[in-house]
Length: 117
Image (spheres, rainbow, N blue to C red):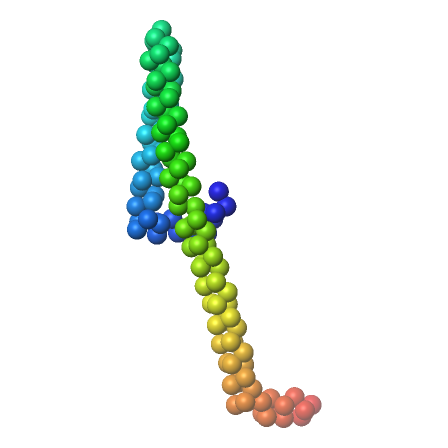
């Protein structure tokens, strides 16, 4: 998901996002695995259907949890982009002012040296 690219996911949901995401993913994976095993072992179609239904519901919970936090992650990504632009501008201003200060201090000497040839 491109929404989460360059976003520190540990900052979502007061630091609980990754833990909860991992827990929901594990629950969905385990439920799916149990349903697949039951399908091969059991002849009871209703039981297998209920197990697959439970696995599907776990996957839906996982999807809803991710969707719920997508807008906030997009906001964090926007803030990160603004921060990076401001950092680059600050760096550029520092370099330009440093060059200007050096030229003011040593410009006459440099020009005299260059014109002496």
